[in-house]
Image (cartoon, rainbow, N blue to C red; front, side, top):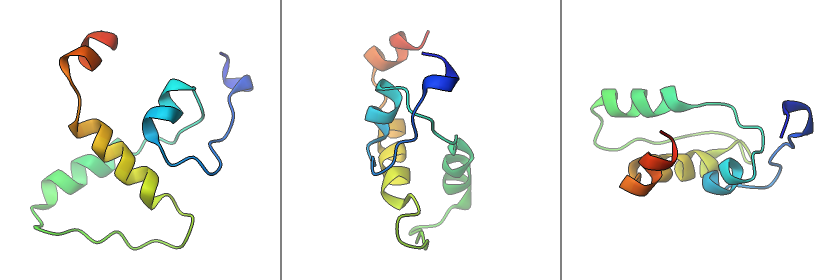
Length: 75
């Protein structure tokens, strides 16, 4: 699918679905680095309503649940 045919994932908060169906997604992987490097025991993500908090949590979940099968798919 070309970039011109990609859709915006309006109302979709499942990171795996966004990847699978090739929606546009702004790469927030630096968020993962910042969270890991912060050393904080608890992190509070304060953002306005409909600002991607659930999608970010879904992305983090997908990142930390990478299996051997997932790794082979991207190689």
